[in-house]
Image 1 (cartoon, rainbow, N blue to C red):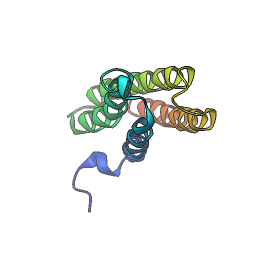
Image 2: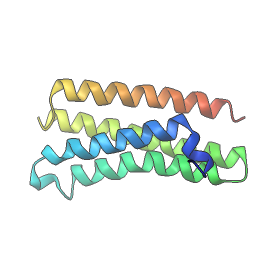
Image 3: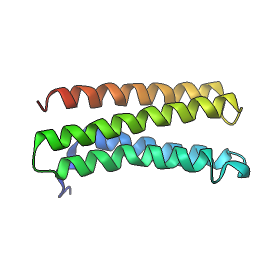
Length: 118
């Protein structure tokens, strides 16, 4: 049973799923990345869902629009971290493509949602 408005949003649900999948993915990163790329990636991916929820609690569409912008920027950071991870050979091409495509799909969903707020 959802009591908060954001829990019903598909973009929030997808962002939550992506965050949990990325959290499992970074378990395979080298220990030397624990405070570096691993930390940055998990903070960025968590920020996507966190900003969606924070914006949905706001009192106005412009406020929600602002937080969706933060979410989209955080998602761009996730994609950049994925590029770093594949270049450093921490993830396979298959893993990269999966999360890259999921990120692209989520970004398009957030942009469409954002457009409808105006």
